[in-house]
Image (cartoon, one colour):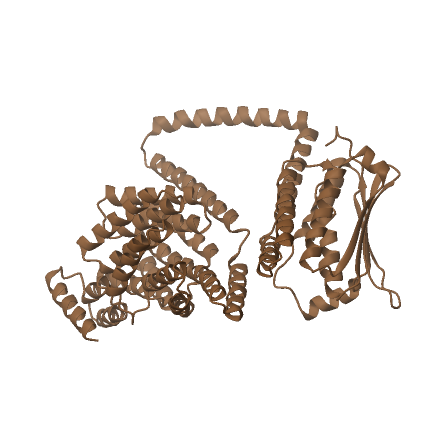
Amino acid sequence: MRKNIFLISIAFLLSLQISAQSSFGDSLYNLGLLDQAIEAYSAEFNVEKNSDQPDLEHAMHLMTSLGSVCEDAGRLDEALEWYLMYKNFVEKYNPNEIGNALNLIGNVWFRLGDFSTAIEYYFKSLYFSQINDDPLAISSASNNIGNVYFSLNRYEDADKYYQNAIRLKLEFKDYSELPSCLINAGNVKMLLEDYRGGEVYFRKALQISTSQGNQFRALSAMVSLGILFERTEQIDSAYYWFETALEIIDEDQLSVEYIMTLRGLGALELGAGHYRPAIGYLQKALQLTQSAGLTDISTDILELLAEACDKAGLYKESSFYYKSLKTLNDSLFDTGLSEKLSQNESSYENLLKRKTIEMQQLDIESGHKINRFLMWLIIIITVSLLTITLFIIRIFRNRNKYQKRLLEGRIQEVRLQALRAQINPHFVSNALNSIQNFFINGDVEQATDYLADFGQLIRMVLDNSHSSYIPLSDEVGFLKLYIKLEQLRLSGHFEYEVECSPELLEMNPMVPPLIVQPYVENAIWHGLSHLKNGGKLIVKYQELHSDIKVSVEDNGIGMERSAELYKQYPRKRKSYAMSINKERVKLFKEYFDRDLSVKFSDLCEGEQSGTRVEIIIPRIERSDS
């Protein structure tokens, strides 16, 4: 308490020495007294709001400051309210600031773990900032887009945006947010194992923050240095920076820096074998992240907590944290996020080009560059007419070839989707958990065999990614290995047979990769997994006239019972493998003008149960593939 009173006194004295536009809240914020800064800013804002002649520029400063300090204090809902208020304000009174407002709103969604919404706001911010020729807003948006790439582990792309942000900050001598950009760039260097480069950025950020009297950003740099030395196993240096930060941090204030300091000390104690102190630090850090809704930080802390409890012999607690980690990872996983990032980047570039063209046209209409306009108009018309003429001729000459190429591209896209569905994170996570359980139970031989088979399966999937069609023998080999892994995961609850006629194996025709696997997966998880024992799965490849007949038969609970269970206990995760396969079947028919048919039969009759799927695959000659 006495420490807080002393710091508040210092803040008040500092506020008397700076310009009239700066506020007492600014000084408290720089000292890291977040709750007190929120109270001070709120009081100033209420005075400004009730004034007969409010200072609009100062009101905008207070809105953004309140949003920023609430964000750093983990009060994200309040931060979002202030930034939305600021956005509505600038739309009415100062449209040139709309880019900055969108960027700030994106920050909150990023901290809430909603990267998809954050991406949209950041690229909108970049677009409006570019149109308004606001280099500092461009710098901030670039820095935040870098943060999204960083979260997707695309570190080279993140570094490109961070470097652009730093360049603009230095070029226009804006040093207020420069430490934050330097820390972000340092984190990329650290994860790319350029530890020396990362240390240089962190120390530069610490130097600038200290010279500015910005204790809050200085703390961020100290914590980053602690993490870097922890990763490079320079334990004494890591302890020094974390403990130095902890001496400065007000433990009554909720901040990301305080959470990361607790996490760092917990990791160091874990590495030193001091499991109880490690658990204490990490549990407190987890409690703070959960109360602040910082889901992206929680995953790392949960993983460390699970490891610490496991090594301390607290197996029940360890299991709880591992389950919590898996649930959190599943909720954060978004297979379309990287694709959406690319789409937003492309949309931003298209909007920017369109706006540039509009500005050029306005410039032309106002009387500027008339001769240049006429010259380019003639060139564009001439080139356009030539292009259209050539394009029409090419369409009439190559229509069939063009349509076939489109189908090839779509088949390739759907095939890649099928491969991605095959190695989805849930399958990989479950496989790795099975390997871990074998190790925990002391069954090293079983774990080693499982790991070798799992590695071979992944290699086969990646090899298949380069071909639209593969030999039948490769498809059968992949299917056997996949079923073997699933049988091990289900502790041998079912038996299986994969049969292929010798005639077919001798001819070894080409087939689409992974065309049968989704039906096998359905049989295992929707049919056999509900049986306690006695499950049976039979897959047969037979020659049928000039085609290949594949039957997948199980003695599971059957289609009707499976549908009833799904309604009662719907799965949280949606499977895309079957819908992708339907699209592949449709494209196969269009491309080869031959049917690839799939027939489902419910075998439930009396006490007998099960399902049969029959797939008729037209034989593909190697020249066709």
